[in-house]
Amino acid sequence: MTIESTVEALAAQGIHSVLTQFADMHGVAKGKLVPLQNLREWVEIGAGFAGPSIWGTGLPRFGKRSEYYARVQLESLRPLPFMPGVAHAVCDGFAGAEPLETCSRQLLKRQLQRLKQRGWTLWVGIEPEFFLLRQDEKGHWVGADPLDQLDKPSYDIKSIHRNRGFLEDMRQTLIELGFELQQIDHEDACGQYEINYRFDDALAAADRYMLFKMTAHAIAQRHGMTFSCMPKPFAASPGSGLHFHLSITDGNGNAVFADEADALQLSASAYQFVAGLLEHADALAAVCAPTVNSYKRLACSHSASGTTWSPVWKSFGDNNRTCLVRTVAGRIEWRLPDPSCNVYAAIAATLAAGLDGIDRALTPPDACDADLYLQLAAGAPMPARLPRDLQAAVEALAVDHALTRQLGESFFAEFIRLKRQECDDYSQQVSEWEMERYADGF
Image (cartoon, rainbow, N blue to C red; front, top):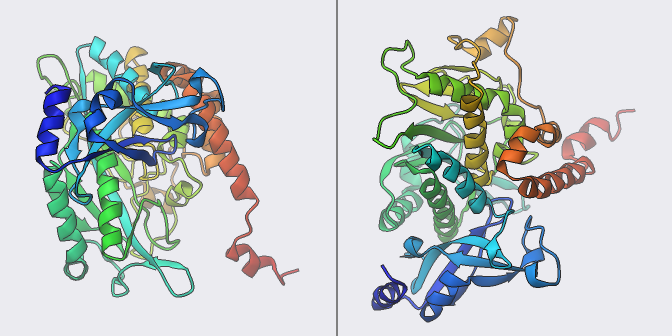
């Protein structure tokens, strides 16, 4: 559609404004409302923002490149059911009339261009896990449903029934936004849910996840709850992941990762891609699990439900959920990401690492056919572990020059700077655990 026909079509639906949305370096949605009738300006020049006011742009406070311009991607425009009169628009970041190197969506587009040169397309299925929270009378964060207290809450139908208002609102709204829903279930922690929808090409999948989060925040607020992407809000419960299901097709639509003659139905390219993920796993942890709290999830600790699927060890296996990489009949499940990640950067970094494995013809370790948690309990030798905290992951990223050069050093210079500051800020906090253990202990 042309810009003019798009304006005409949206205006006929009662749309008067466009929410120009982009992601900051933390993956948080930012934007502003602009008039629909000026859509040509928003598409060709972009909606303007003060660059230094946005996390991670690296832009100065004055000069030609101090302004961040969010350019509307015309094909992304769609009415927002929870904001009458407003259409949502995905935007790319520009500065000085050039693509901004620190824009994570531009980062992903550059990696996908590398893939396009091979005639390949990356498909990504994203599995959003999340918590529904509220604050009690003392301001403490607790589960939004006080009756959601089963010892083993996975697939709890009673909780689904009690929270059907939120879940039905989500179902209807996501369908209106063009999502093809597959399932809604209660996950393995009290107050935790997962909503699955159909996979898409990598860029569309990232855009769709950003829209999913925006929708969930709005719908949860409508029901007096908070939609939380915090990886591990409760110490004794499992955390939330954001697993990526990855597959690649060639120009003829053939599955690049599939080989029915192989014992695991994986091609040589799939094994090499997996090897690339495992080789760069420490650095990828900083991008895919980018908060201090992420490493409370990435721990082989006891869970109140008796089960944890935390992918702690750098290994892969056929349908093995205790591994960092799970393979299923020509598809790769990358289990490292959590919902606090910048989804554009996480997919871009994952793709770059996998392609490095293919380009260098790396060989992965033998497939793991054991429950790694039982193996640990038995005292058997274990695969190498992921970094135990954000600081270690960030430093691994800082020295993985092959990965950062391929992705873009400008982006990761800002990312590493911000994450080092986050680690420093955390190190200076005094927790309740410390007070209880040390206040009168010496």
